[in-house]
Image (cartoon, rainbow, N blue to C red; front, side, top):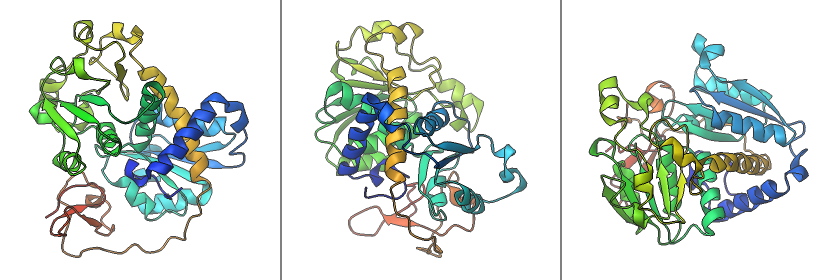
Length: 358
């Protein structure tokens, strides 16, 4: 494998993805063969933010591989409540565990953790930024159903501004050939510019639309997402957006028979309950597939030879990330990390959160 930590889906090469897909498929088919693969290994789950599926999926994955799990699902039950910084938490936890999974409300937290970790770090969601292991579940389900990740028309609906699963899926699917995207949202929740710039740069066709009805008949995949209350700065803004998009039978009647409906879950009101029983609704299968892909990921990452931890370098003394949701605003010891946003090296973005900084 070409990666030591999984912070973003694009840390994977396409060969890495194929290896993980094939291993996940074999695990799904022959799970008994893997029951002792992680015997005497320990997974640490560091969940600074609530989770049901992702946390339990990782725990189930490690237990089914014969390993053990330590960690916390509430920072108030850890030394974080006493003021311990992320760097120190990671350096302590990785003394005890062989691999760690982190979910955090601030963008860039997983990358920050990886800078100080002697063990592999997996990003289980960093604020509204990225969620690469959900994308592994998404892609596994699409490929297993459609047979390919190329030449698909994909509709993504809901909170495209704050939806980390959306951001990861767009990055991933844009790496495959000839995919077309319909980005279904209100103007207030539209896709961030850095992602639409990426789609343009990679030559993908995409269309911003305001309703499900105007594109559902063209879609091979419909990826529904909830409007995330926890990402809004005030309740009034959330109330204006929360029920704008609801997939019901009337809309589904316009769709192709072989459409597949995905959702990262939890869903609230954005999918009518009766649609759960439609053969095109695959989100519960998608959740189970996530466990198999996390099993594959743990196996591969435990084979990684890790370098020793060294002091991370600072890319700039003067440039600071303006994104208030970036981890650098609370973990002030973190070095500035930048990458070039254009071919001329005249524009830069924050490596932690992808926010444009100049």
